[in-house]
Image 1 (tube, rainbow, N blue to C red):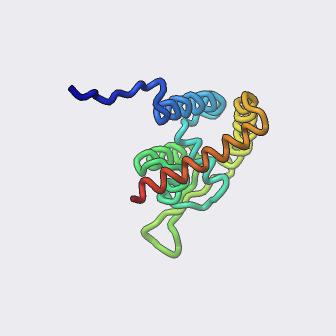
Image 2: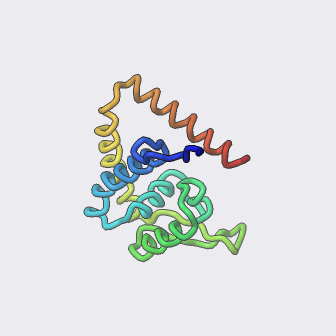
Image 3: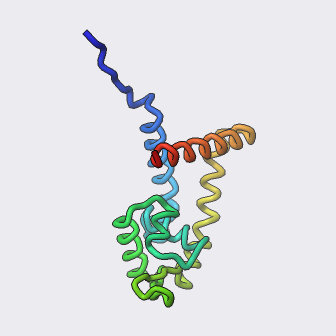
Length: 151
C-alpha cells in the first residue's frame, strides 16, 4: 500500500501567506473604508495611480496583479465617486488613460501616511535586521514565482 500525500494547511506556506495577506489587507482597509468609503481593490488602484499616473486599465492590472474584472469594477466605482478621471489616449484611441482627480489626489495624500503608519506598526514585530532579511526573502520568492510561471 502506498502512502497518500497530504497537506496540513496550517503549515502550507502558500496558504499561510494568503491568510496573512488577507488579514493585513483587512486591517489596513479599516483605515480607508470607513473614512473614505473605498474598497481594498479601489485603494490599490488609487495607490498605483498615485505613483504612476496616467495608466491604462491593463497597466493597473500589471502593477497590482489584479485581474481585468477587479480593475474594471474598482475603476467604475472610483469614477462614479469622482476620484478617478478617464480620457482617451491620444496615441491610441481604443485605449483609455486613468488618473486621479483633484479629490482623488487629496484622498491618496490622506491615506498614504495612515497606511505607512499601519505598516510600521506591523513591522515592529521584526528587528531592523529581520525586516531587511524579510524583504530579501520576499524578493527571492517573488522572483521564483515568476520563473516557475514562465516555464
